[in-house]
Length: 343
Image (cartoon, rainbow, N blue to C red; front, top):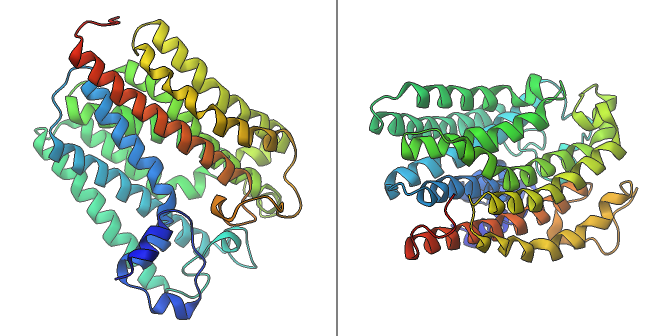
């Protein structure tokens, strides 16, 4: 067991040699192979699904919420594993492709065989599926939850190919982390669909979308050469950078609107404490990506040549945490003062 590596792998995507890899425990290998550092975004989506249910007065079974959180996190992990396998099989990750530069690509770097990699994917995917089937069973085999499970499986299997290469990867992230994870998670926990929850999830989900947008800007030149038409390849770097800026500012406006219509109480203004993080990364998005790693670019922000992606992740993590804390405070406030700031 290597708790130090577990902690590291949950913070960054660590580079390891074959010798170091062989000495690691199974948990460390799984965390590195699944790029576990980004799974926090999915954990926050699961948290928000539960908090929105409590916000709307539902009684949430903690065991079913735990099954939901594990199912979503394992689905994201399975997707990351399948992404790497698919790109390797299609030859995308050959010849020092971008993915192999910023972190270990288990198969391309010879850390795992294709069979081992598929085994990791299969076990992770089956555990995610088991959590989903359990939730369907406790909800009397609800047909809508079957549909949500099917949609989740679709995005796990087809995000890398063909969706990402058809400029639909960014939209897929917006759909998956919003309506599917948070809106669908809310449905699983409450038995009802609520579009207010979908709209109220957007402040956080837009931040998640900036991360994938930033990553696709970072790898735009190489993707263009390989004819992988992500949205930044289609619309260009400048338009993509300004799209990210808009998606970083819009969440504050959405929170203000949701307070104005009384879906949120003013306690959600806690998100304003995330503004220093926004101010820290904002100037970088006004300029093209530098050709070399800036001297002041901290190691904790991710492995170069990733640049915009870790900056977007830094901003989204700060906003997401304050958004979650604000929603927790909102739930407590409504419990203590029923009817306060009601719609």
